[in-house]
Length: 293
Image (tube, rainbow, N blue to C red; front, top):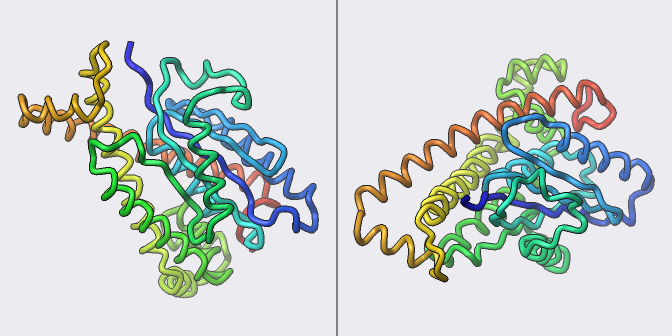
């Protein structure tokens, strides 16, 4: 039985000690914990809110932790206390549902994600995301690291430059995907929404997020191939992939392409369902939504 691929984020909150109403923040984090755990889908998720303003979330697939974290960031209500995320990728011999208590789970990815969260906390905080790529040398680790860090930084910069009204438009548009629906929800004209969308560079933000997700899909497609051909002997994934490209280059490229297409389709359908789930949660608990009417 092959190992299952997953991703994990550990989230912390900036300057949470300065939060005027700490109980409000605690209830808000509990809302997100329940929102993640209550999402019924074909992809398993497990989330835990820990004291100290930390949420740990693990889910199947390499794209999942960033996708969930990105939506959490996009819908975050308190701009004076923004979240940040350390992300790690890993594999596990069991299903996510068999992990048990996340707080006592002793997987190496926990340590890696925590180190990345701590790196943001003690660094210059120019990005809301940090991810470890140390296990993916078969895909030119240095190049991938540079590209991911640049995109994380660009995304964070664009978010910080948005005004409150532009952020409202972006938050809703990222859930509803249509300016007309956003205008109806905000009780504003489409022209006003369109102006906020364009001035807030929402299209560039969405494109940046999509590029990051596509890179994670590609990583998973390669890793699936490595898992398929991984022998019992201690051979690195880089060696496995090198052999496959050397002996069966066309078949290997075709397999990776097919893997990538399947992963992309899974991600798109899953994200549509998650956005619907999240919007319904905001309808049920309007006090936590990030937009005003």
